[in-house]
Length: 449
Image (tube, rainbow, N blue to C red; front, side, top):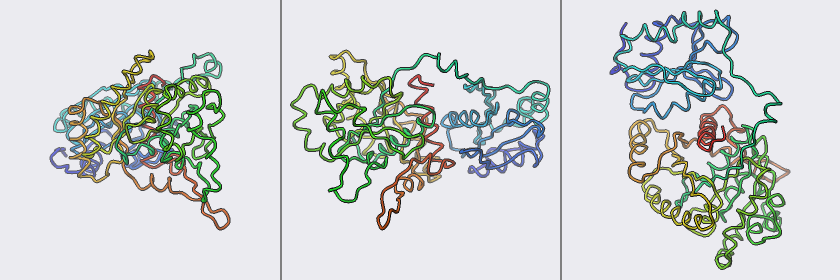
């Protein structure tokens, strides 16, 4: 049997016609040696092959990921690397029928070791077999000790140099693009990687404060954050330290710390605009807790106001979430100009310019036709048009993200908001995996991995 790329019109046909009917038999894998749609921990693999069941670990396995023929495989390399790290497998395949790639994991890095066009797979089957064929891998891993990823001992962890606290602002002047969703779930993903996380809500709408479960009251008379929130941090040089105002939030396990916002923030902006030190007070107070936290995430208002300016003055890095729709795209010009203005002020106070990590495609439709055609074009066009790079991770708009934010707890006759992160609500979901991958990408870009 031969394989023809033109016979694959969608992802399912890449799976059935290329992988199941052609590739796996050619590589010597019988139905007893491969599995489809494998749930491993909190990830889902398209295919997992097993070279030898006598080998107890997954070193001899190959992770195979199939994509739609119109998908750009470059957008899925990081995810494949994440899968190989999770399973501790050493080989992974990415293919959309038109292209065929093999990657090898070397510790925590991914090495590109083989490529051919889909139409040339048959001509290269011997080479492919020597790399990931059942017999080749079985011999390789049975005649040598399985490779392993070295783990840091407790002693080496203590002796390793502590990295400085990193501050990351999540900002776009267009609302409804997924800022809050990004902040709270990225915070949870960092926390699960062992990072000590502080979230600061600088938006008077207090969406992050709600999303992290700090608003438990139904009547404003019982408002327990009115007298201790970000407003108080900003209006006092000597009182209301970060440690005093930060609240432990159990919306994620491990817990994170959150400085809540409040609607009162809105009416104080004009007064703050008349006080010069307000712009710098957050920097000063964050410096005093630099040994307490590894990462600070700041949720910002969707505007060009003072609070957005304070966030950008205090931050080291910037993530720009966007649904990539026309108004959000047009707003990128304002974002660039706003960052330029803030960088001018930062120069005066001898702070380095903000490092923009990129535009994060967020709240993206999962419609197959949109993903394979429209999204692909937007991901390529936007950096050229606005001269801001795209982040590799894409956060899709899925029901799970809404459900975890709307979770309620019944106490007596009252429903109390009890939101949880997507990584705690449904850790095996695609949304949870996307935020895990986003956390990996961000940590890599800020040099904290």
